[in-house]
Length: 177
Image (cartoon, rainbow, N blue to C red):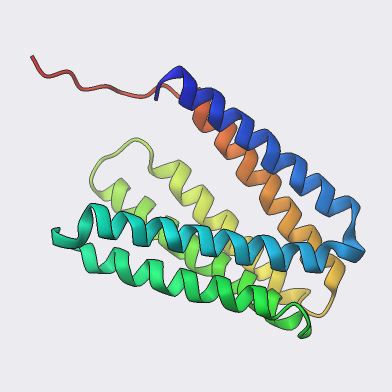
């Protein structure tokens, strides 16, 4: 990662942390903000995946998986933006599913990295367990809107801190001579 990418990741991390604190301070409007951020984030991720599919991976092994992930993320984002007038149970269910899937994927990737002898498996397992714990908190307090906003704002702060820490990590560069 070059210095411009590091600075960009630090700035994005600071913006994510600031948005988490803003959500924490505005719990009454937080439900609509969470629905909007979740919907827009999924739409952006879906568009990026589809662009990546059409520009790079459409002839690669596993390229169709990128297409399907992009399509599902785009659909889920559009659905999340359309349900802001429906009760907050659906947004809470979205958060539960998102954290559960993310946690399971990171946990399994960490355990596979441990089997292969990689050194970064602890961080992946810890992130997976954190996401699963957040999902369990969401399940326990699924009827309270304020808790939904607080959980989402806490996860934003956590994601911003992880991005900033990742910006300071040393990256290994392979030189071919």
